[in-house]
Image (cartoon, rainbow, N blue to C red):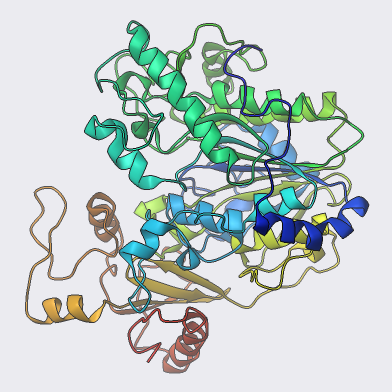
Length: 561
């Protein structure tokens, strides 16, 4: 297949820094006995079912991915469920794109970010407010770095948004490059007809591939630096599942069935994040299935072979013929990406010893994104590993996305340095079928001004503000709202006013200082029971304090005094 070659097509390892040399000595000793390949696939803004209730695995799609068997066609993801394990109470710790990806790739809570911008925004001694301001720090230890040091070949495809966010915000948007090697072009230009814009986008793609390679990745394919808007080109602001899938297959074509060396592949999709793939105009689904497949993150490409997937027109016909809702055809489109990957694993003789994980960075039901309601916390999660997971199994207990890294380190036999502290638990006993009961009694969650603990039955949410903001609230000051909405007496939980506005409209208790929900009897979290169960509240507050004091010099109201 033609196109821009990935950075380091020879698969040479990045020159190990002093940190990696130390990690290599700690990890390599156990490498020879472990040959597990790993593919971690993360969709963007997807709840497990709409609405996500405790019953969603029984209401159609066996994977819990999509919207139930009566609304979306997902045969390949459902195959993963039949051949693997579905985890029906999977959650993310921080329900926003950047912090969730940070947590997935480090096994650490977002507030532990070593990113320069995050530390500058929230100096030590102040309340840290994680949202889309979290990124990997320079030389920060992570899942890919540690696996690479243990002898894995590591690969990246798809959406980033956890590196150089200030560059994303300022470079092309402002019309002035803030990083050597990045090019600017007019927002309204069309790379299909403007060769200068097309060339600039292709060069920028190479810049980002080189940048990501420095974070512990030997091989980097198709990259979206952030959301599609952050290509800063209106014509290219369309999803292209084939373009990213093609890169995944390119990488798998380099792998040998003998398993030497094993590999870790991170694949972040852009769907279903905006532009909304469900949105239909007179011209069709112009953000997705009815867009021009030649618009890519590297400009306009007419020379790329996408024959490994059905055409977009045939996907729509397939969905219509099966009697499914056409507005969810984007999910079938993504499902065919999974199908292409599974076929390639079979063709290369890699399937048996490859763990495939499909999940999402957070949910969106009832504008739960950037809130601590289950509409934002709960995500679909399915894992298949023929050599290790019993087909057709499920796990109903609490899982957190901090657990992914802990699990992969465990399965790969990687010994971690003493200085690297994970916040997650290994799911290996669950995957092996050795444990069917709960691994954890509770999960910890954070976003903006809010923190929470969640058990299988209860959730407690605390909203607290830094002293200077609380003084402004107490004085009666009003805070900016979104659009034409009147000012608020209390600020939104996050800086994103669009999400704050819609989240507060769909979740009536959004601004309340203390909230308690009975998740078994009120999965939509409509009724705040904070005054009804004082003993439960006391226990959950004590649990929340235990989590919060693990963040030194990060105050959060009375919990850390």
